[in-house]
Image (cartoon, helix red, strand yellow):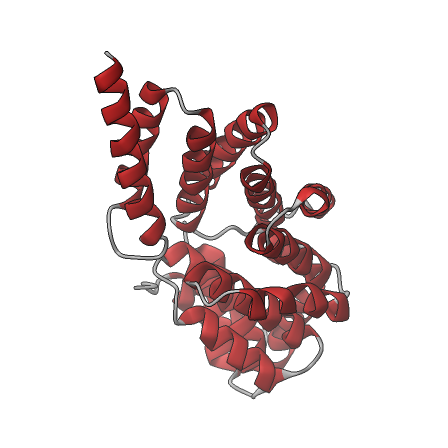
Length: 273
């Protein structure tokens, strides 16, 4: 029995590392992570269990399974708090903050991210919490603060997750500040590491605003229609973003209600792939 437990532990660690290295890769990462979770539970390692639950949370969120992501993070927060795994607790709280952000629940998202940042012991975990704070600040209209929070992630790591989140945060902040060139640069940096359709839908609303500013009104409306109709979109945060609402109103006024509706419906029929 002891040999079986030890074998399960090392197998779980092997799967853990493979699944972690495949964070944004086109592999069946979620299957590996679920197998790892089962083996970790057999081995009785609570710290590793909550680590895997956190990875499952991010994986589920990046593929548009937002309810499952939230469930994984709640479990990870509970276990990490009990065993004192601070870094994992911060990651999980940051993940939960992002879940509430995507649902449009900004106050809860801010609270969780602040709680995570207050106990963060390592730069990567601080970066994730600050990314959530950046996004909430941006949607709430404080784009200068959003940029301050987002800039930590820009310099803290060259790993794909940090590149994506810092790029997303800083693109949103720069867009709000009217710095369109900077916004495009950050948006393109984030897009280079995107591997799932759901995460594309987080970036495209910013692109729609930037296109509208450039006078590409029809393309902007088509993208809005695509994002707002896509089954993997999390629309809560978009509905709470005044800048996006004002852009939509201006486009309707410029194009006319009939033309806008036709383009929006055309976008809804497009395939994001």
